Amino acid sequence: MVVCTRRLALKLIMALPVSGCMADDLPLLPTQYKADYEFGPGDQIRVIVFDEKQLSHEYRVDAGGMIDMPLVGGIRAAGYTAIDLARLIARKLQSDQLILKPSVAVEIVEYRPFYILGEVNKPGPYPYQPGMTVLSAVSIAGGFTYRAVQAYVGVTRAVDGPPRVWRAAAAAQVKPGDVITVFERHF
Image (cartoon, rainbow, N blue to C red):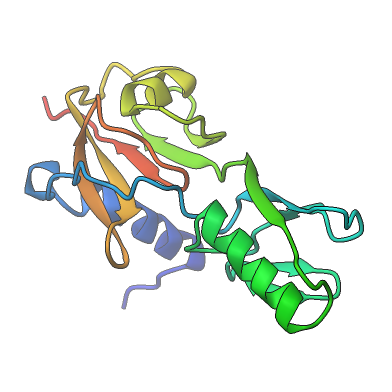
């Protein structure tokens, strides 16, 4: 009889994405993305309602993809661009008869982090910066270990559906919320 402790089970589950599949079998990360950035859980945004200081504030998108504005209540932010979210908030303010002709702007204050694990010197979460590549993300994480595969990595990202693991080159663009896995070389 095999007894599996919670800690052992967690280690086995954590090992699956890295060693449970061969990197060569992963599909290539698509290079075409939506041009406008869509908010997601962990992003910090600023909502500006002109001439309404009590409604203008910074909000962090929660795990459910929502922000909670005074007087308005919960509003879904995840999946919306800045322009679309500003329009949604303006419609809500107008339909609730809070402001006759609201003028709303939304901007990103802080992107959600990306995560890097595997064969890097300092794995963990790091702040995202626009224009990052896999190679710049690896350098932020202290560089490759001597055992690392340097030609490609695994990137866990949602592309037109649920998140899945993709194979990406060192020059591939990193997006907020990505989980980058640097694989170990087989000698």
